[in-house]
Length: 314
Image 1 (tube, rainbow, N blue to C red):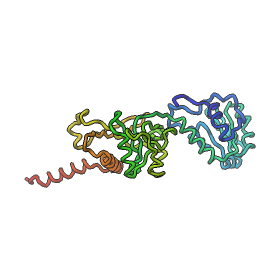
Image 2: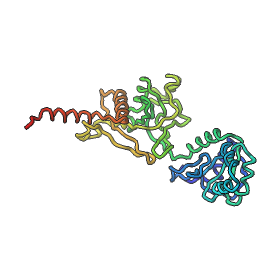
Image 3: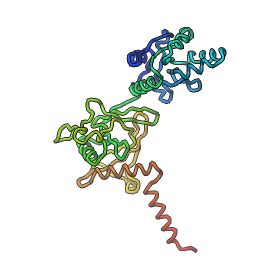
Image 4: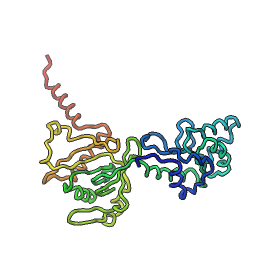
């Protein structure tokens, strides 16, 4: 979603699932609680005066803390909580506490809600709701888990992405989504991929049609969601002219999706090349790079040492 979401919308979307009641601050229904341009700003969270989220959640612990304070200190903190800078306040399980905050909420037009559920349940609901609000896009490709790493395989139509995915699955790797994975930015530098519900467990292979991977290979062949850590782009060998330095470093680049940079490797395809082995090696090498090892640097250091030993001392 690329537009702001106000308190009225959030309340409407969560009302049934959390049995919400709007206790006070009804005139603040238009307050923005979700701003897609501010990904780093917290949408919701437990009571926090230092880095306040837009939706403050008060549970039994927070209520007990407020009641232990001296009246002057408690009134000051509640005033900050219900200030014009706050988004909304959600009280969990204590209707009396919600009623006690009603006057202040009405005065500052701060939406004040009540739910009978504990904070743990509320946070779980809000996490899933936030996920639906995050910036998302649909890409063309195959998303798999290979050696525990989320790998997005892209390329033009007919290059063999689905056949490659099927071979990787047969080698023990896991399918996340075929053809149209949905990518969601769930953090400033994290892309998570999921499968549209209508295509869940399914893989289309030319000549074979639609295959149900779960029924063919079992539950272990399917992964519900996965963070995208690497993109492998397939391209026909005759369509590219690799630079000379690619013999040393490979065809590596970074592709930006929803503002997140994802490492990308271009894999030239040609008859006789075992793509599944190449993909597995690419993933293993990327894992080594994440841990700080680069084979080309290792080779250069060996050459430098060999040249130093071969150079006569004057």
